[in-house]
Image (cartoon, rainbow, N blue to C red; front, side, top):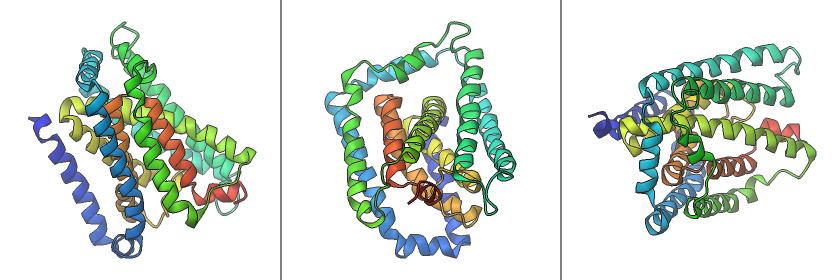
Length: 313
């Protein structure tokens, strides 16, 4: 029954959150229904094209039924309800860590906020601990590797040997290339520099942690309860809400930061919409590296303003 109504429940939650934000915040309504509508279309259309291309490639060349059976076997024996509960707790700890470390590091930053290098340290430390190290440890203790069960899941996600599962690079290149073609004439690209390379390395680590947590762990388990699209939509809502909440403390957040209500609505329209494609790519190819590559490319195209200043832009 949960699987049957999973997609409807996820869409209903997203609609309530977005509708409430639009109703309560005139600035957000101006963004959505004013000049900002063009910017949303610029990003949504390439994402939609990428999703359609991924669907076509899987239909033509993929063996998704076989891959889904491998995922189901890898999840066999896992106490998934308990694991999802732990993920919610760890996500709360991640948010609390962002707030606490930002407050501590602010002492060493500029008077108007924390310096970009310290801000990136907050993002890295919090994600490495609560979205990577501790989740892996907890999943291990619930049957991933310590008990010798379920060790196929990391191999499926990270050791991708089948050629067709790398075909996801095609829609990634198409979507990112089209977004770049549409927006770079207006905002430009950051100039190559050591600071930019350091940010790319840091964000690659951040994206890897997030994709393992949100897609590899959370979405995979939610799909077992809510169905494929129910899991994708619910994970996208959680992903967007997380970025809305941590926006004031996160160096890599690309939201303007008016207030929580505004950022929630905008996060659903940006991070949530992008997450639908990330989630669909994961559901089609189960290849973490494709998702990470797309996240890093999007980061370069949409480098947050504070970090642009930090690298001299």
